[in-house]
Image 1 (cartoon, rainbow, N blue to C red):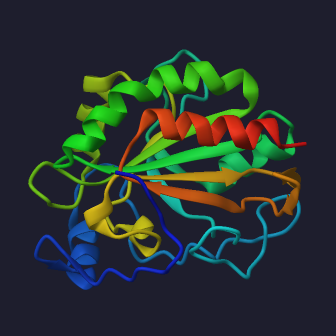
Image 2: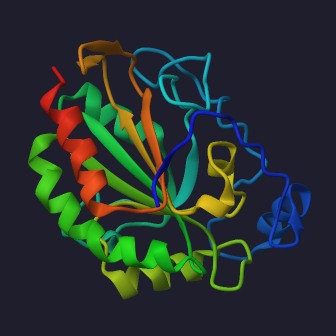
Amino acid sequence: MKRLITVVVVLVTAAGLSACEKTEYVEQMDAGVQEDAGQDDAAPQCGPDTYPCPPYGTVPNTVMENLTFTGWVDENSDGDPLTDPYRTWGLDYFYQLGKAGQAKFLMLNASAGWCTVCRAETRTLNALQADYLDQGVRLAQILFEDNEYNPATKQFVQDWETTYKLTFPIGLDAAFKTGRYFDIAATPANFVIALRDMTVNGVPVKAMEMMTLMTGYSETELRALLDDFIANSE
C-alpha cells in the first residue's frame, strides 16, 4: 500500500540495534572497502559544479543532502555493476548526470532483505529502468538490512545483485542513513528526485529536490508518477 510521506520520521532503534550499535557494527565490518557510518554527508564541498549547498530537508519539495553509500556503479555500461570497482558513490553522481543533460530524475529505492515486498519490487526494476531510460529517469537501489534484520554487508549486497541481476547502481546503507526520511515499517521506500533545475507540474524545482516519496509498492502507481513528472518537466 502506497503512502506519501510528508512528515519527518526519526528512527532510533531497529531490529534490536541502536543507532550507535549500528555504527559500531559497520566500523567493525571487514568488507574490503567499508561504509563510513560516521561520515557527515553534508561535509563534502558543495557548489554549482559539485552538489547543491544547504539547507537540506527530509520531506518533499526540499533538497536532499548528498547521501553516500558503498557499492557498485555500472560506469563501463556493460549492464553488470559488479564488473566495476566496489567504491563509494553518492547522490552527487546523479547530480552530475543532470548537469550534463543526461538525466532528469533519479528514482532511489531503499530496501531490506527481510522485506518480501522489496523483493517483489526488485524483480520489476530492470524493466522499469529500461522503459524510462530514454526519458531521463535513472534508478539506484540501496540495501540497509539483510534477511535477519542485521545491517547489510558488502557480501549481502553482492549476493542480492547476483540474484536479481540488476543493471543499475546498487549500494550498502548499513548505517541506515535513508532512515531519516521514512519509517522502517513502511519499507520499501522509493524517492523520486529532480536532478537539475526544471519545472514539474508548472512549479519550479531546485536541483536534487525530492519530488515525492512513495512507501510500499505499486508498479502501476509508480509508473503513473514517473509519467506525470516527465510529461510536465522542462
